[in-house]
Image (cartoon, one colour):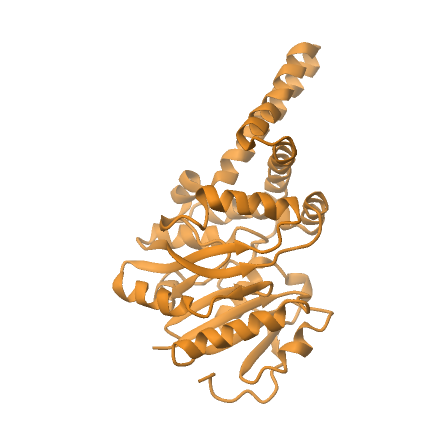
Length: 336
């Protein structure tokens, strides 16, 4: 049995030591493993801190302009040689017992490509992560059973990943976990969550609206459009159409925008006001909270804008190796 834990990070000097410590502790619980840090061009002390951890391999993206969520995840994966691979973000702490539970599950369920556990949002001061934690309690990582993706990481069977070509699409700025789940699902593999603690996620401290603007500015909001463009003409296209909620949200918002435009053109202002208020009323009632409802409405509109943004992004072959520089100091044999 061999395990590798890949940690993708960008400017995580506040959290990286805890992430690395948790990864090494989890590997020790299963008799050893390899820990890889995939750094996307940090300009803080992330790499300096990581170099203090004996046995950690550090790879840094050669061209920071290529950074994306998919690039970081694939960079972590492309250098490993193991039977199982766990993907961890640099702002997460892995429960030291989860690898044992995950490996036992995959050994008992040969039809499953990957397994995740419960994710705890440790920083709910931002409305973004407050809403995410609320969704997790209702239908997210708190619910055990088969799923279509493993948001916030999971333990993957490396042979299944090799069979579908690559771990993460380097072109994706978001939703890389869903895209991987779609390719695995189209190939006949299943994914599951189990009722075991997996990670504590510390997330961003920036306010939700500031975070949204930053995602639009940096291109990360384009993830939904990038996922759809990547799936066009591929075996997992139907899986994306059936399961990708962001595609449905975007189409609904486009129809809403078009209706409002038509009403404004015709001068039907009362109808314009009525139709304009329907989504907000629906989301406020659904969230049972004015603040969360309004935020959800803004999020839906940002998703739609990002969808258009992502559709127009240039793509590189996802199987193309990612150029990186190794920054490890005195790396011995894999951690044991």
